[in-house]
Amino acid sequence: MTAEHRGGPGEPGDTRLSDDRAGREAPAGPAAELEVHAGAGSDEQIPGEELDGTGAAAADGRRRVLIRRRTIAALLGAGAAGAAVAAALVGTVGRGRSGASGGAEAHVLGRLGSLPPDRGVLIALGAHGDRARTVAGLRGLYTAASSLDGLTEFSLGLGASFFDAVELAGRRPRSLTVMPDFPGDLLDPATTHGDVLLYVAAPTAGQAEAGERALRAVVPDWAPRWRVLMRRDDNHMAYGRPISRNGLGYAEGLGNPATSAQLADAALVAPGDGEPDWAVGGSYQVVRRIRLATERWNDHRQTDRDRIIGRRPDGTWLDGRPADSRPDFTADPLGRTTPLDAHVRLANPAAEHGTPAPLVRRSYSSADPSDGHGLVFVCYQRSLANGFTAVQHRLAGEALADYLLTTGGGYWFTPRPDPSWLDQLFA
Ligand code: HEM
Figure 1 (cartoon, helix red, strand yellow):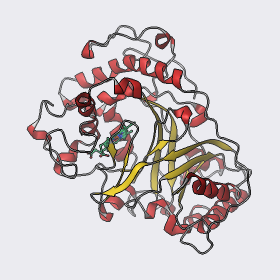
Figure 2 (figure 1 turned 90 degrees about the horizontal axis):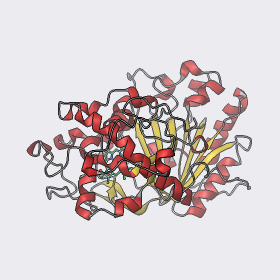
Figure 3 (figure 1 turned 90 degrees about the vertical axis):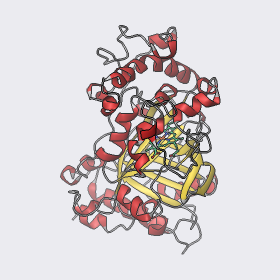
């Protein structure tokens, strides 16, 4: 998808709207000349509208698109929207300790509550068109994964285009589509989508890349579409959850489900979900490559930044409650303590009832300078509609949106860890 203007009223090209938030001026200069793809989601109603009962949140979200052009201009200046194409990956198989606990035990879906390794790499590939060769390649990937170093974590995701390539569109997980553009996205085709997504993570970048080479050697004719090296800063377990520090300086992971029952309920397709049999035990995987406008962010006082997120950097809530508790937003209906458009408040309105949002986030920071060290947001969910899509629509009205630009990623379906699904899918 190229950057093109498809804006209607209230969208990027509509100069009738002015930014009346915080007295900011409408963008000028290079930003005004940028063509922004408003996205297919632009016409959809934003579920956050009912927040104040007047639709003001949605109107505000649309106005925001204007401000974001300034962010976009700044980010494009610093990075390279068209760059970051996958590096050429060659090499022989770098085997880890044979017999170590690779394979199913190393599969991310069996480890959702465990600490992800510090370094990771995502590689989006084009699968081979021939079905028999594709199946052989997938089997080979599982075999190679079982020989990976025991400290390595991996997964394999199938994009909507994969099912077209192998002529099995009828067996696609029922809500797996190509990731749409959401309002404000500026998706770069060079960093978006792909038939198959491999994820390999390990304690060091060298180990992760050795794992990557081992897997890539199995499918040398699957062309790399894009690739990103990632890292989790301050990666540790706290309150029973994996926590890291994102590029804006905030602890991330605190609101994730914690118990294995909650994790499975949020992330794993269950029998009776109406999904094909082969998909049971798998998960919808969403990746969003998000650049951060850190300079603009750092221009704000700490307290203002905290109000945009809705927590302090260490996770403490703005009403002073500890990070591992749940806030009482009902005591703050007008958003005086935690603004109504704070990230956490929109991301999970049910948080005050102790209910985690129905998705499991396992994000990394990008180690790729062309991403401006942004966030590689990764989440797993049992239902896209209840998980990522619902949350993302609510976040269209968030204050944080002014500091983010999503330039890539996609939707994949990660089948269950053991390869028995292959026999069911290709039966
Ligand atoms: C650069 C982009 C983002 C940043 C910097 C960011 C940052 C944060 C932070 C600091 C928290 C609070 C700590 C925590 O619970 O982990 C949080 C919570 C959360 N975020 Fe994000 N986030 C980003 C993007 C997203 C996206 C794209 C989604 C999903 C569409 C999302 C969904 C959530 C959810 C569900 C929570 C938990 C809310 C709760 O239950 O309290 N975030 N995020």
